[in-house]
Structures are given as structure tokens and as C-alpha cells.
Length: 67
Image (tube, rainbow, N blue to C red; front, top):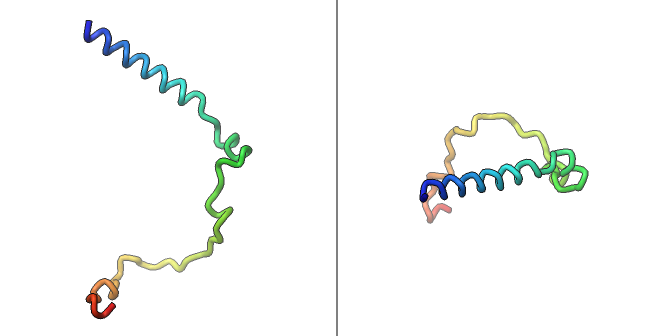
């Protein structure tokens, strides 16, 4: 009986999740309703110089007094 109730609960959860996933709006619908926006629509995005960012960072070696 316990196993049967667990299976039934799982089945109900699966149905609920499946319903939620099927009712999600598409990307186009979200854009039409002004919900899905792009970061670049609100912030000015500029080209950045491409360089190795793993290089030595000397400011990490500063002591509290140096800062």
C-alpha cells in the first residue's frame, strides 16, 4: 500500500510539472509582452580589448597598509 501511494504521488507530481512546462510561453510571446528583454537594450555595450585575463594581478599582492 505504501509503495502504491508513493507511485500515485509521483504520477501526480509528474502530471503537475508536465502541465506547467507545457503552459510556458514561447520566447516570441515573452518579447511581444515586453517581458524578455536583452541586456544590451538597457546598457551601452562596447567592444573590449581581447587579452589574457589570467595574467599577473599586482594589486592582489598589496598589503592593507599599501592599499
